[in-house]
Image (cartoon, rainbow, N blue to C red):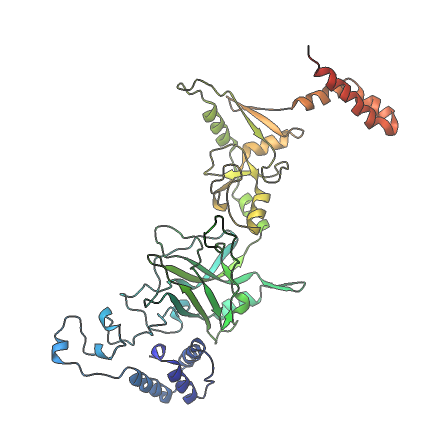
Length: 451
């Protein structure tokens, strides 16, 4: 009943109950719901029923109307537009503008459910797991941003309440470093498409605007368009709303979402309590998964070098770099995704750190998706890196064995060192390096002379 009241009626109710009656509709609604949750007096309950009866006066239903299929004796008292939805007349209808997505954890606010013929409040939508966050609790399950009319611009109100344990988890995780205050345990708002075929990536509705407890919420900035004429798009990522949330067990939090509806496309939103993880923690978890048996990589090498009878060119060896394609530095923790078909590895530490700053989770070797949960540390490359300290490239052979690859320049430097040039340069004191360089230039010129 309270959900269906207008601003003027909410003000009358709050004034009658001796509460502050100033503010916007969602603020007044929050106060009225809190009044109910706290347990209002019988007089206030009578006032709610009186205001509701004024809002939807009972009309007499003619016998002809009663004979129509699907018409309930109390259906005439429902708001316009809800009678044709087959709404159960025994329950109070929700407000057309607020499709009771205001269900907090375990329906703490004690509000009625939406009729099944409306947009589902909790559709069977799942959001993709984010590697840098552990979900501690669902504050609002994935809920449809239901458009109840043909208007282009839509607005919906949500609410959730925190339990004493959740308040304690957030407040005790505060980390003050310098002038910035962060929480390791956060209230996280996420949007996605209402698709049930697979876990959904974050996806913002067009022209999105969010207010938490009446305060505007900062959204990720628009990315520059890749093509001319293409509308700019926000990066797909969750929104941390912890700083706008009231850390209270008695006052519910409200979220007002406005967006532009699209034909043939609907969106869902969800609110989670999460714990933020660092790249160091993710690296520790990757190490804890263990190192992949070197025999897996050896089998992959043999498979790649197996002669194809239909091929005119036989591949007898594979050259692989021991430098990370991301940082061009020597690999420390060689890894790749289980879905990758190449042998080349990248450095796990650098890859995770880069995705901490800008999460894309794309393999730097083959440009295919390489999500965190698919990463493995390669045991064969770990063996190679530990035993081959003076070489940046190796060659795999048909039997799975490997040998270091040295460039022509390196071979010449080793040869020059063997002939005693290093000893001469050391005996020449400060000018040793210049003399050594001169000798090497003479040798290189000699080697490159035409026969």
